[in-house]
Length: 92
Image (cartoon, rainbow, N blue to C red; front, side, top):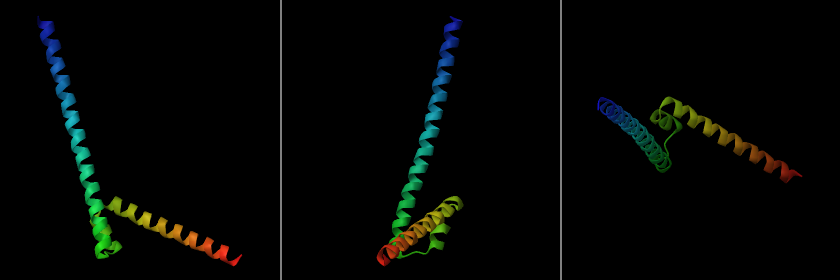
């Protein structure tokens, strides 16, 4: 009988550990979803109210602000390359 009780107790402990892990995952997922929603709302406000890059960078955590700057730089470089290609095509 003691073996059954011990096995049942271990089973309950394992279930409790799984429940705790699931709760931690859902909390992390909800935080990520909340941050993504806030980010999209802020970007919409940025366009609507013509906010500066400094406003945007001040809003995001430092790492995300840096990533946002990198995206802006990459887009501007891509646009400059495409404009250069258009000018070269028009000259030929």
